[in-house]
Length: 112
Length: 115
Image (cartoon, rainbow over all chains, first blue to last red; front, side, top):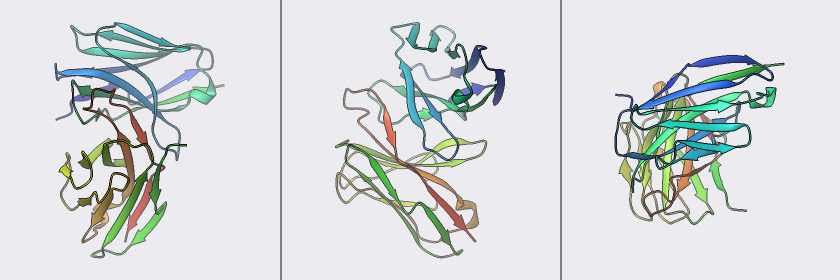
């Protein structure tokens, strides 16, 4: 049973376009949603995160949009660059929880 | 600089042999985690620990044991390695559950090949 789902599995955009990565979850107790990115042959690293008290979190070209009612969130990458090519993991953690649940990832390729 | 260090970086083991993967963190985090990463499955939790002396089963613990002898060190043990355990293993540390955000710091990973 996959608690955090991501789509699409892979995505290709042109340099300068906006990439949209989708995520949904089932557990209503989740209250912290970090996104990690992972470059080939490297380890995952925290990119940006949001709590449900907000419906939007922005950090430069990266923005999380959050819809608590529908249990969905999305990561928007504006003005995509080839250096953004990586696998992006949506994750979730319950309030006071010790564990983070990861989605299966979206592989993003930004073509120059 | 605070970090999570895994060893070895690469390992080839024979089926039925014992494998120990080591992890050391200097973040002073209470919690440590072992994940495996396989294509199409993302990151799957094997074992985790709340602190020295504690180990807990994650989502896929079968065939693995863990040991947390100190705050800094967390090992993953494959008593009888099988080819299905060929994977990339990541160790992570974090302070989730302590009132802080559930952010992880990952080690650089261990590539294990069981032949």
